[in-house]
Amino acid sequence: MSDEVLVSVEDGVMIVTINRPKAKNAVNLAVAQGIAAAMEELDSNDSIRAAIITGADNTFCAGMDLKAFVSGETPVVKGRGFAGLCEKGPKKPLIAAVEGFALAGGFEIAISCDLVVVADNAKFGIPEAKRGLAAAAGGLMRLPRQIPSRIAMEMALTGDFITAQRAYELGLVNRVVEAGGALEGAKAFARSIAANGPMAVIASKQVVIDSQDWQQDEMFANQGKIVNPVFTSKDAIEGATAFAEKRAPNWKGC
Image (cartoon, rainbow, N blue to C red; front, side, top):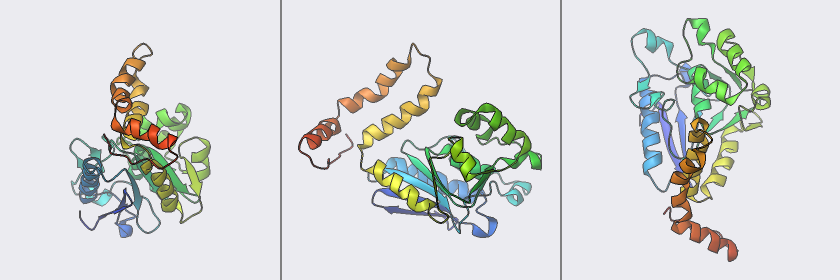
């Protein structure tokens, strides 16, 4: 990892921090590569159950580094897309902890996550059209799936920002907390996830995401391919046994 992306692990939870505060945590190639490497580690390390992505110095991310873009640099990692994340996320849960601004590519990072915790003073938007660009890192495609399509269209065409409260009302974010508390709020989510069966969590996330494109006559068959191994796992027996014995389960991930 470079100094532009800081990674730590606490109690099975990875914390990924975009660390370019002087550039409002704008994403350059080094940031994209650092995030991609963190996502690879998240999915390959069985001791890590979930991750949080946030930004340094009370700002989430102002989007793509336009100075680097003008010089010919593209902050894209092959196979993972913008910021090493927006095209292909991790198998394990990823939570955005947003303070300050999440704009353009920064907003697209946030909506690529599975859960979003935001400070009450946060602002969101895809203002690419104001710069002669388009929100091509998922904003134009994911946003209409996450909020009403006319609101998504308004945000895409005007480039105007919305507040944390408006984002919450639209169902775009999970929780709004006091300014300065987004990371702690995300950690609380992550601890709840990390306490659950790891196979069950990964399978549940996959079904929620993949099923958006399933036809009604195929959805249960498709789901079965993903969740049946969970029901026949050692963890399933351990979970039921722990419940009966009124103790915390000891997950093995198999």
